[in-house]
Each structure stands twice: as structure tokens, then as C-alpha cells.
Amino acid sequence: MAYVKVEENDNLERAIKKFKRMVEREGIIREFRDREFYEKPSTILNRKKKALKRKQLKRTLGKEQHGRSNYTA
Image (tube, rainbow, N blue to C red; front, top):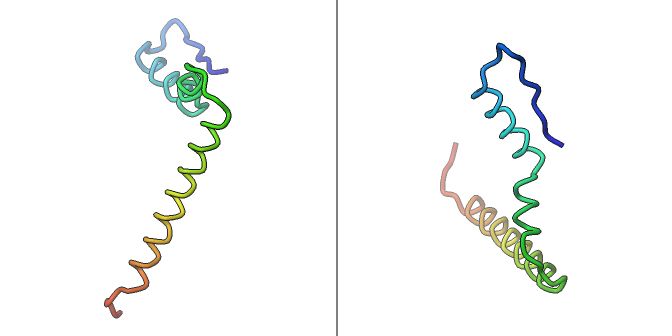
């Protein structure tokens, strides 16, 4: 759980910025958006499979481009 203790003489804007960073780091907002609407387990699985496939394709395309380089040191 993200929390920031603010003293009487502390800068409020700095405390808010620190709180936002903590919330982002813990993934609270991302989790909230993921859980906002019900998603069937099969839909979740399909989405994860597509993301994995996209990631692998991107990785293989990157390796091919680096392998064909005409650059000589």
C-alpha cells in the first residue's frame, strides 16, 4: 500500500509527486484498470498469447536486422 507521511513544513506538491511515483511503481492504477470490467478467462489467455507472439516476432525481426548489417569495424 502506498502512503506518504507529510510533515507540517514539507512541500505538499513534492509529497503528491512522491505518492504518484509510489502508486505507479506498485502498479495500483494498472491493476485497477485491468479489473475495472470483467474479462473472461479465455479472453485473458488469448490476449496474453497474442502479446507473447508479438514480442517474439519483434525479437526475431530485431535479430535479423542486426545479422545482415554491412557495417565493418
